[in-house]
Length: 93
Image (spheres, rainbow, N blue to C red):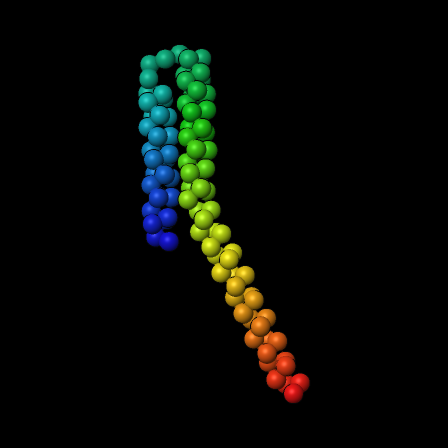
């Protein structure tokens, strides 16, 4: 699972770095208030799109792992049920 943690951290770092860099660039640019607000709005929309894409990518990577965990849990539940039933049958005899 450490590979997944690394990719999540990387995506988070890229998004955070882009956000901070974009914000700093806009705030220190010599533009009027109206122009700065327009730029902030545009950058915000771009960042939101990047965050959504990053989240989707992480979700796609995690989905097979989640399915495997669900399958393993179902198998363990079935094993437990079988063991319980065997135990009950032994006690009844």
